[in-house]
Image (cartoon, rainbow, N blue to C red; front, side, top):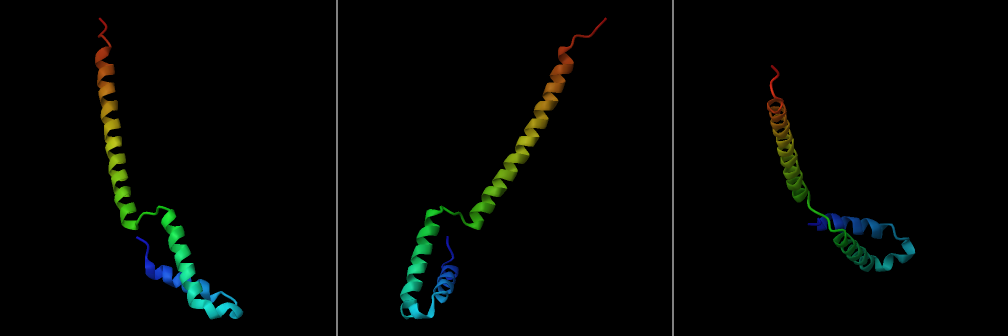
Length: 89
């Protein structure tokens, strides 16, 4: 979710950059900035920090499991390799 307080602050800062001759409609301009920012950010399909951290943890667990499985396969391959060679007499 987008932090609306930060969006308001950014819109205020943008409206503060408007030249003095155009400041009569400052509040309307600030609302327009806010609207444009909200629309633009909504189109970016962003995730929250919490969602990102959850997915990061899932990926880490998946990577650990993959490494564990790779070690197990290597051990099994080593066992099969040593038992597949017939003993020499």
